Length: 187
Image 1 (cartoon, rainbow, N blue to C red):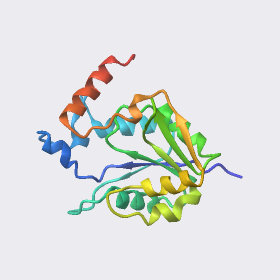
Image 2: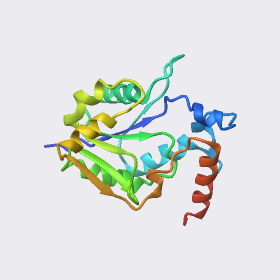
Image 3: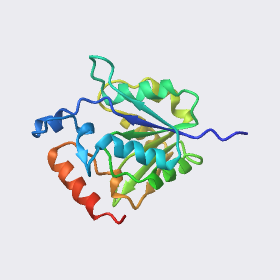
């Protein structure tokens, strides 16, 4: 049997309104972090992991909720062995973290990574979650699917040593905090 790896679905279709409301003059995914756009950091981490990737970008003139974006990405990659749902505003996520979530999917239908007790991303879903993921709508993302699997005892809580899985960019203050963390990282 051929290994069919999970695909990283990078969510890049949101409006980023909180970032603009915090005083930014650009979309959060285009904001520079260490001289590179936030989204580019995410895409480089995915590329370095070696996992396949699908980026969900906004449709012309239409803002999508997180659930809509996940459904679009999953439907576009229906033959995948599973999906790692990764918001495009997590620029410090490490490639190894992506690989650990992907590897855990081989034994679990849903994988929820944690850093210091805090739930993070990417959340991994096996191929058996296709029907539920492909019909998501609205702003809530896949939280209801995770809750249903948690109630069934089928969510694997995966502790990771990577603060990047919880370091999202929603405001200018978040960007400044990420910049400090990036500058402090060993090269």
